Length: 235
Length: 365
Ligand SMILES: Nc1ncnc2c1ncn2[C@@H]1O[C@H](COP(=O)(O)OP(=O)(O)OP(=O)(O)O)[C@@H](O)[C@H]1O
Ligand SMILES: [Mg+2]
Image (tube, rainbow over all chains, first blue to last red; front, side):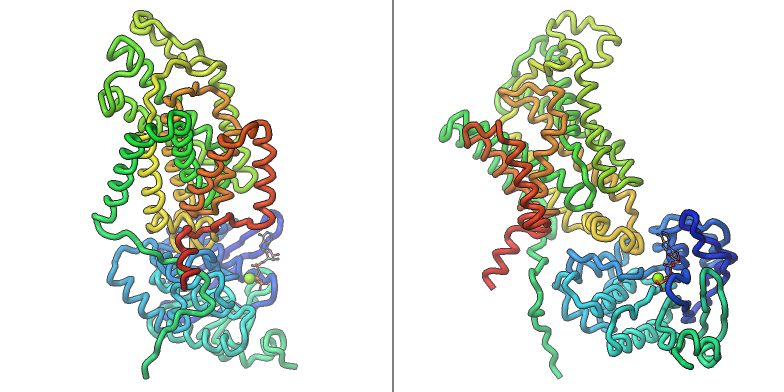
């Protein structure tokens, strides 16, 4: 579904990605883990068109998408929930959701997806008329995912959905990620919370300073000594 | 189990007020506005006399400018301080049409026809053409907003107004001889003879309460509908978070340019009304910074995206200087102070993005 080949990205003279390759197949949850500054967010930003690669190819459903403007990439069904959630703080929760369906015109489909998103996140439903900026961090993350679902993504890219959230909320969110995936949405999940990410994902990539260090089956990686030492806090 | 969905206690403001739906709701506000415009036109001058009628006309023009600027500065979150430039483009264009048009059509200057007569329709059409030309200028000035933001964009829009001011100063004397106008060759029309630094004198004074408040109605209704449309939400999403907006499939470049074009259109219409107002000679200095600054203050004061708030600010800030003697001397100081105080005390404006009636609802809960 998504394949990234030898991708390099720089911010001015700082090279953030040094020729990474990865692929995501339809139906999978793939996670990209790694420490601070590894280049995880950079990878997602480049895939969604916010950054232009210095070299390398990005293919989505067999078509090259590098260099396309972000709104067209989103309209293809490759939807990015950015780090920090990107909630429209001065709009209501309802209006945020409506923006999720901004480029769609199939009213019935939108209604179905809205219902589905609100069923996954009852707390969002309770707060439809609330100003989104007044939601708690966890609620904002739920809204960000719910809103992305209204774009009916084929591939949903989540950047650190667990960031700054209490363990209980993190559990809820990962549970929903699993449900979304079981209902047919492919997911590329960036996480620092490696233990949670490896539990929910099928496959994983470990990114360090712009290079893929390890890749493979999520359960196998979770069991490997290197990953346990570096990311799971084992000794 | 029956689950109730209580109104969240923490909810500050229910931001879904009545939303006009259906064709009737689209036309009704327009119809009401036009009826009000007719009533104002017929009744007001008899009650308050020409001086106060003129203030009410000034207020209407200011409302159009402030509400339209709010589409760029308030809704889309760009920062334009060149709005008077668009107004002036519209004013000169409309003036060119009615002034020289009158010579071509009737052979003489002066007003033609009675209320709603041919002259007034030429005038109304000239305002709309003025708006269209200003919209073209808005497109060109809006393009840099794709690459620039904040201060840099402000400087571009400021530069536009100032350049326009200087260019208008270089234009030639207004032609005032019917025969000579008809005989004038191409070279005399380029650049158009619109009076240079002295201003474009002699434009027939068609502007009246009816036309001003008809255009006010159109502007306010369009702005309100826009704010509650999918297009308007897309503009607001650009203001709120450009990255998230793009992730929702919003073409932020298009939204920004569109905001500039729409705002410039209404500014151009307001310019047409201004140029045809009794006692006004539109001149290059109208394109300059001072006037743009007035409208920026109205949007800042009213609130980023609050149409009613900005309208109220336009009314107060236009009426106040007229009603207070000697205010003109202190105008810039007072307005600047007002702006600074506002930035410190209430940076989101009096009403933020909310409409005034949302606050009523909150209080009456
Ligand atoms: N806008 C920018 N300008 C310059 N350098 C940047 C910019 N954004 C990121 N970088 C650099 O690129 C590298 C990768 O950053 P990135 O945000 O992709 O890391 P990350 O893996 O998402 O980290 P984290 O887990 O802390 O979010 C870092 O060294 C960072 O400093
Ligand atoms: Mg990151």
